[in-house]
Amino acid sequence: MQKKFNLYVSHVTINNWLRKLLYKPIKAKKTFLLREKDKNRRRKFYKMIKEKNISGKEIFFTDEKKFVLNCPLNKQTNQIRLDKSGYAEYKSGEGKLFEKIAKPLPKFPKSVMVAGGVSFNGVGKLIFVTGTMTSFSYLQALEMYKDDINRLGKNLYFQQDNAPCHRGKKSLGFIKANFSKSLEFWPPNSPDLSPIEELWAILVEKLNNYSFEDIDEMAKKLQWLWNRVPKSLCKNLINSFDKKMELIKEKGERANKRNHSSEKSNYSWKNNWNDNDKLERIIYNKKILEDMKEKKLRFLKRQLKEVKAALTEEKKRYSTENKKKIKDNSFELYKFFLSEEKKMYSLYNLRIKQFEDEIKKLNELKGKELFDLFSEEEKINNIKIDSKGLSSVSTNIS
View (cartoon, rainbow, N blue to C red):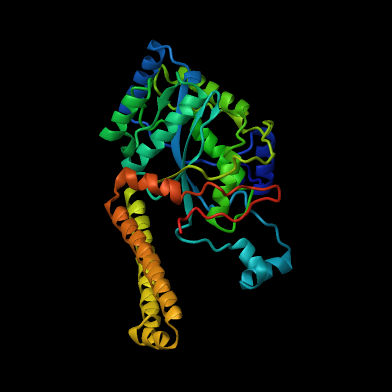
């Protein structure tokens, strides 16, 4: 402009006019790539849905999500204005101001993985995944999804995406045998079609409004929020599925139309406290179960060793030399001493046998039997939120 019209206009003036004439600039974001074969599968999926006359109200949508503790800062929204003295303090790298702006974050932040489902009638119970989700742990989740469908609507279609653990022979066999209805397939690279993806995004935004000291505190708040997902929000998200189907029917393109009504804060997120606020669903993969088994075996063997050491000390007290001394002093006392010795041996031998039997039984347990044992003995099912707020909770098995 300066060269063409010989006129100097500052960039501030240009930006001011652009703001008046145009909409607010939108920051570019990453999204998933849709290849031609992906679009074909999306069109095929649309045809299947329409041929079977399936609507979003008849589907139970499931998915997994990893929630990260203290998400990295967004440079566009986390901005702090400073005066000259504050800017000088920031540049010096000293004081609390530097820590506030240049917040140190771990290279590998802690996270918690959960699984869940949503339908027109509400959400299923949240599942906490310990370790990586494998075919073994996914079978445990499927058992829980079965209970959710029985509660929310027995005629619901079960939906899952194409994660490797979902497409295993055992997983598909379980679905065929235990779910009366399920979607034949789900198009790859199609998170835009799943209502639960939007629900995860809403929960992430809500969690970002809080500051958590550790992963256990965040898990507790996540469970609290999940239990209060409004049914009206679920209905809105499910209804958006049918609208998105119409958007992909011709070309299978990305359903860019977002469900903005689900982002509004006019839904009634209840704040009442109840007894359902507990981490009652926890699943494990084989590696985690084996680690827990080894930890418990070490504990039992340590206890057995302590009992045997205590028995050795007791034997010293009931030595032949002590018996002779007592017999020489009083025969009645000697008879009482012998009876006490008999009781002592009986008690210790019983405790030793109990520990040995438990160790033997634990060594023989594998897979599903091992999961059932720890589900009963070790699962956290009594940690609740009270009216005072978040209480301490540990999702780690001790």
